[in-house]
Image 1 (tube, rainbow, N blue to C red):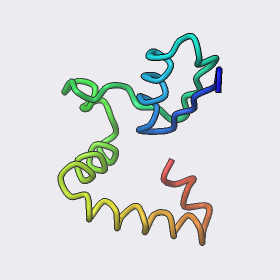
Image 2 (tube, helix red, strand yellow; image 1 turned 60 degrees about the horizontal axis):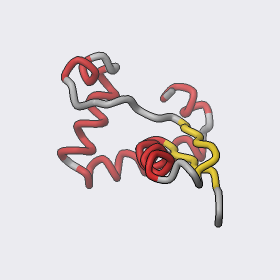
Image 3 (cartoon, rainbow, N blue to C red; image 1 turned 90 degrees about the horizontal axis):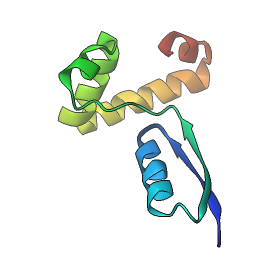
Image 4 (cartoon, rainbow, N blue to C red; image 1 turned 90 degrees about the vertical axis):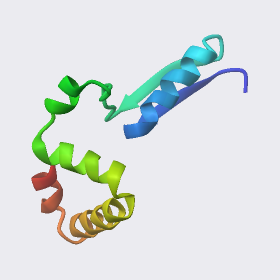
Length: 88
């Protein structure tokens, strides 16, 4: 490939941006879908809704529990799409 587009979603947005930065002559455009800003500072993390902070903390501290919770959410949304509206 001589040129391409990069698309990053959620946690992958940083990789898409890093690819574009590393190869500006080859990456023609970058798409970002649902990207998060930096959460390194306490201020940024503290501005999230409490349940998003809880979800991120769970993923960091208890990845197996987070995996089970995400699977349950996926199944709930699969069988009852209205659940997705509640989650968002």
